[in-house]
Length: 409
Image (tube, rainbow, N blue to C red; front, side, top):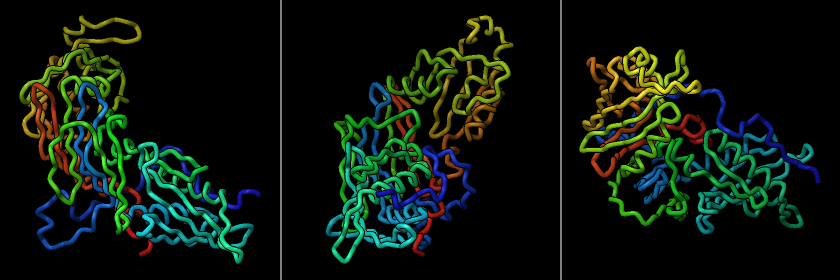
């Protein structure tokens, strides 16, 4: 039997490399602004809320404890949008079956020009220690009973997986079993709840799933770590702690290859980075996150340039950064005074608003949330490590209009 279903109504990239979506207006009220909620204006629940405590010890692999709640509305909108995006799947309707803990879908499939009713069920589950959705009981009702068709299961699985990827949610599939596994690390990183250089260690962190009677999914994470309890708020509450060794490894990964971090020293409210930075003459394409390389465009004229490694492939110069932490503000003093202007420019490219006093540069880390609803409530640097506690309105990170509103409305 040839494939009766096509999902080629639009070209969907495997990775989210589409043109940037038009800027969406910011939420009028963010869930992180608790005082605003006292004005009597009611916000709907977050589509995704993450309350997590994460710890890096000895390396950048994170142990995590807490919950990620995925609202029924998220699954509703995802399934309808994905299935209705196919040329040959029409009028998809979804309902939650509390008794089975699964979503029932009724739709019409175009087979050789004829619309045929189809029924299927989507069950949330944990598969290979990943949050997953499985298509079950995919059938076309006939007067002789329901005929289950594997081709419909495979095409429906592909449609959901592509829609997730199209919107930046990485996943893997087992089309034969009708399973779509969401990449939790990619999800948390995209939503701002996880640094790009860090990953949850799923050998240490085990997942569980509670599908509630109202259709909400509560993903539990547990690990052997000892982590403090977070406050219960309507926002996503994230705490992260990294010991000295883990933080040094994380910074080494984040700054490479332009800066070779050789040593990190921590003290109360202070960090000192010692290493070598690469001089790239004429380079104007350095990412703001790897700001240190740009410093050397100025530093090369400083006497310290004589200390450069003259390897023809890489020109390296010794560079130290003394960083003082005051609340959520940082003051950076480079060992090369003439580097300030380039450092200031680089920090601006990272989305921050630095202020220079001629010797050092000051900026507030909370400025990184200017386009989203988020705040860093607490930031500490001590000899044994550094930690932060953040509150986020994850919904403010969504750029898909269909996720921001009920597609049945």
